[in-house]
Every structure is written in C-alpha cells, then in structure tokens.
Amino acid sequence: MKIAIIGATGLVGRKMVEKLGSSFISRDAEVFLAASEKSYGKEFFLQGKTLKVSSIENVLEQKPHIALFSAGNWVSEKYAREFVRQGAFVIDNSSYWRMHDDVPLVVPEINSENITSKTRLIANPNCSTIQMVLVLSGLHKAWCIRRIVVATYQSVTGTGVRALNQLMNERTGMIVSEPAYPHTIDLNLFPHGGNFLPNGYTTEEMKLVNETRKILHDNQLQVTATVVRVPVKGGHSEAVNVEFVEDYDIDDALEILRNTPGVVVQDSPSEDIYPMPLTAEGKDEVFVGRIRHDESCRKALNLWIVADNLLKGAATNAVQIAEYIVNRKYIQ
Ligand SMILES: NC(=O)c1ccc[n+]([C@@H]2O[C@H](COP(=O)([O-])OP(=O)(O)OC[C@H]3O[C@@H](n4cnc5c(N)ncnc54)[C@H](OP(=O)(O)O)[C@@H]3O)[C@@H](O)[C@H]2O)c1
Image 1 (cartoon, rainbow, N blue to C red):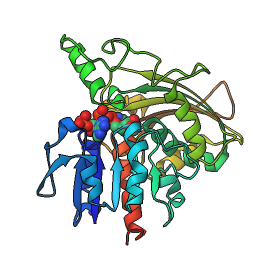
Image 2: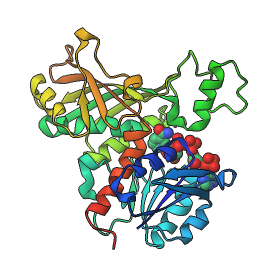
Image 3: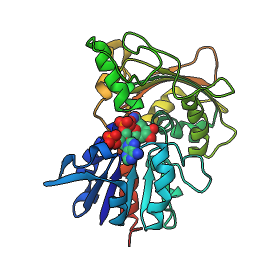
C-alpha cells in the first residue's frame, strides 16, 4: 500500500507522520511526503527508513492509495479531487470540503458508517468541533441536546507554525517579522479566530455551529460559539453549556462519559483535578471535567473539555479514518 502526507512539514503534518509511524497501516506501506518548494529534500525518519519531502506532483505520480491532506484550503481545493481521480482515498484536514454534501465529515467514534466503499473524499472536522462532539454525542443520544453555548480557549498551535513562532518570539523578546495574528498574543488573548463574517461571528465560530450539526445529523440543534485565542501551546479548551430536550441525570451523564471511547473523565475539583492543555498535550484522548448541573436551568449541564488540537483535533482523527478504511478492506 502507498500512503501520502501532503503538508508533512507543518504542525499537523509532523504529527501525522508520527501517528502513521505507530499505526499498523504503515507497517508494509510506502510513505510519500509533500510540502511547499522551500521544504523539498527535508528528511523524515519513519519505520527505519529515511523519507525525503518532495512536490505534490511527484507524490501524485506515485498514485497513493491513501492521501492525508494538511496543507491548507488552497492545496485541498486544487489537489484533493486529482488524487481521488488517481485512485486515492483522500482524508482532508482543511476546511475546504467539510460542508460539501457529498463529503462525509467524520469523527470515527461517532459516524464512521458515513464512509462507504464508494466514498473517496473524507473531511476531518475542525479541531474544536472534534473534541466537543466526541464528548457530547453520547449525551445527545440519551437526552437530545436542544442548545449548545460554547466558549473556546484555543491554543496558538491551532493556527500553524507561524503562530507558534509568534508566541515564542514575543515571549523571548525577539522581533516578530511575520506575525500570524493582528495583535500580540503573549500575555494577551483575543476573541478572534479566522475571519469575521457579515453576521458578526468568525469563521472558526461558524465551523463549530455547522460542523456539529452535520456530524450529529441534527440541523435543528442550536449552537452558539465564541472563539478566543489564548497564549497556550498544548491544546484547546472549551467551556460548554448544553441544554437537553429531556430531563437528564448527572450520575447517568458521568456514566455515559466514562464509557465514551476516546473520552477521559478528569473530574475531582476537591483534589484540583480537571483537564488542562499542559496535561492533555501529546495525548490522543479528549479530556472532560468540571461536570456540573447548571443551577440556572433545570435541563442544562456545564462541562470543561480539553484536547491536543494537533492530535485528536487533527492527526489522530485522520489516521483513525485511514485505519477504518484499511480495516473495512476498502483498498483493493
Ligand atoms: N493546527 C491545528 O490544530 C489544525 C487542526 C485541524 C485542522 N488544521 C488544518 O490543517 C492544515 C495545516 O495546518 P497546520 O497547523 O499544520 O499549518 P502549518 O504548520 O502552517 O503547515 C502548513 C503545511 O502546508 C504546507 N504547504 C503550504 N502551502 C503549500 C503549497 N502551496 N504546496 C504544498 N504544501 C504547502 C507547508 O509546507 P512548508 O513547510 O514547506 O511551508 C506545511 O507543511 C490547515 O488546513 C489547518 O486549517 C489544523
């Protein structure tokens, strides 16, 4: 089998190389890496072999069976369908294809059945969406969520390598020649993720609304989001308030969360135990804590959700989708 990673030198791409290296699907696979021209020739070490980064065209010529895309919207728009035409299953990490009707938006623990033998292009949801829906899907099944109010505290790694460099350079007093953000991020935060839209929300906020509805197959679900960028590196955090249609039970909610694959409950406030980006960094799971009844609304619950945005929010989810495709024997 041949597997390609497009955007292998990026923050997500590097994690994809790592996750692929520890996955059974790479054991007998040939792996091809692509990035922009400035990275041609860069070397990666995977399963005892040295791999060199080359151009997207070179990798396309290899006719990979699976291609993991993580090089931004423009690259996905231009090349994803071309890879499909050459026979690849494309798993795309950009936001370009996510809301296309014929492209499933997949968190494997929730809706892997949306991938069929005929599916060729699969979208990985936004990092903030993945961690939220993974925690909420079981609760939604149990009591039907009417409304979600979420405020995010998003790590700079969510914006890519330039944003991480901005934070680190600001922290060490170095000049930031190409800032990723319109404001200083160190010792600061701002309620701004992506671009502003005519409705006053940002693109990152509307991803949480639209992607959640698509993954949970519920267009009636009311979702409102405020995205905040914070000077943090290890992962995204979210304060989430959910209101159910039906009466819920907090002990049953805890039980559902403890039994949700990929979710870890960290909820012992008396011992100062709750999820944090520092402790979530480097882990594949999504962590949930501060689980408490909303005393202002009988049918509502408050949660605090944290995950490494580069892992379950991106690379881990994408590799899990690839593993699903291989396990289902969709690759001839
Ligand atoms: N960061 C996250 O937490 C996260 C989570 C979910 C989804 N995503 C999405 O994943 C994608 C990558 O994000 P990132 O954070 O890894 O960004 P990044 O660190 O800036 O990396 C971007 C990658 O794309 C490559 N690239 C850029 N332009 C290219 C071109 N014209 N041709 C070929 N390769 C090109 C870069 O190659 P060079 O190194 O050669 O420039 C690099 O490998 C984005 O679409 C992002 O929205 C990110």
